[in-house]
Amino acid sequence: MDFIVQFKNIIKRYGEFEAVRGLSLEIPRGGIFALLGPNGAGKTTLIKLLMGMLQPTSGELTVGGLSAFADSVAVKELVGYLPDEPVFYDFMRGRDIIRFVGEMHGLDPATIEARSAALAERLSLADAMEEFAENYSRGMKKKLGLICALLHEPALVVLDEPTNGLDPHGTMVLHELMREIAKSDRTVLFSTHLLDQAERLCSRVAVISHGQLAAEGTLAELQNRFGASESLESLFFRLTESAKENTTDDGAANLQGVQS
Image (cartoon, rainbow, N blue to C red; front, side, top):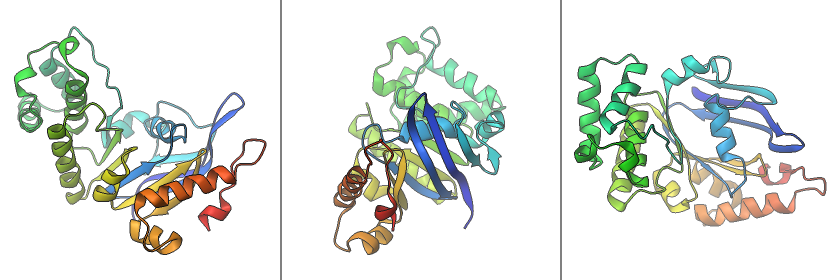
């Protein structure tokens, strides 16, 4: 199997606190892959490590065969990233922000205009392109960030809680775009608390708990391992509760029983 992302025995410490604990995970090229886990499980830390915003304490993390931290500039050409709370310069208009991002990726003005116009129209943001970013609502900023993330047609699209702040129409279009990306042999990696969405959209999921991998696979594979009739939601609660029960007194989680 060809992998676009590989986490190899990743450890990330903040002082004495270990946010990620020897995690290994491989994400196949193509399809939609979800990172699931309770608050504080380590999902956003993993995404920030992948984006080169954090350096692992130890371990190796590669994107398309490149080091996520040492080769972070080259990695950003392969990746489109939408954070949970996109931040823009308030004094710039939506169109100017998109143009700036496109130029940073080496796109010509005609390509930037064509791609952004099509996305803005689908996301019902076309009428706001001349507005300053400070006048954008949270949902509008999320849509603008999504356009910026998709503009250079990256091999990997990373979405951190992408539906937060989106209205139903925006959520529907986002899901359509995710499926279209997957059909083009590119990869979507997203974190979410919405298990029903993950169940409908994803080809594979990884459940993270206490900074470790509790389980990974397709829904069918997880059902075969943990309960053929269980939904993703019931599997999620079972896995995260098992991880919690296996946490030792010194705070280090032992998930061997969960993963077996």
